[in-house]
Length: 185
Length: 123
Image (tube, rainbow over the protein chains, first blue to last red):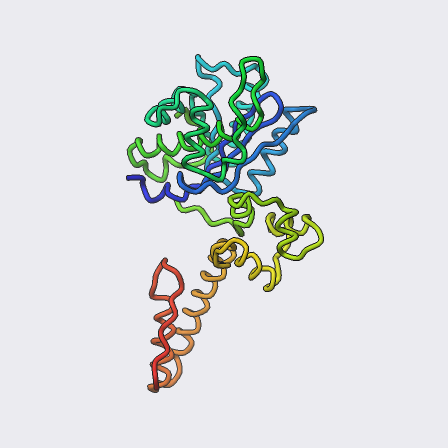
């Protein structure tokens, strides 16, 4: 059973990719407040951070969740790794808790649904949140690049993985939840 | 850790229905989707007629659509109710005053729950 304190925790999950980023805002694991993609074409890092700043000001999240790109098995490119690190640093400066979730943890979260691929996870998410159905792209062909809409599903998966890990953790004292902390899930 | 509600959840409910801002603007009778965007970003508070139109579109009560504004209004009202009770207590006691104070206390006795209205009883 999840600690009551976390039930309405507002979480902003961000999944940067080569052409922008996908985001998802949760209030607890069952309430998806907002989701979408932001296209960033020029001066990518600066513009992406500005757009993320706008989201933070609008939703005032308690936690920002990103993929753990520093993880040994992460296959993210250097720019995305750098952007992820800067998102966590910006979170720290804004007194928002930053969390980095490894990709493997995301797959473990969805292992029970039988989803072994990103697309499998996306379809599992559509079952949980039917409102995401309209954003689900068709399955990617081997010669195609990934549809940017997939980053919405990656962000939602990151958010849900964060909540799942919270449930598994022992209840912590309020002190441990203080901002300016960056944790690896 | 309890998080304060957002001022409004208009964007959430619009996206859940799969509607665009332009479509919602049409349903609300606005000329421009920019107005819908301002409502969603809390840049502008809709008038009462628009709030009821939103209720009709999303089939949710206004207190859910504007949860943050409702929560703040509720907290402020509770605070004023307590102030009024303490003022009334200083007056000379009478059955009418006791009834009034009991009614006001019933409003705030819900603790953290929602504001409760005491049932109107026959005098």
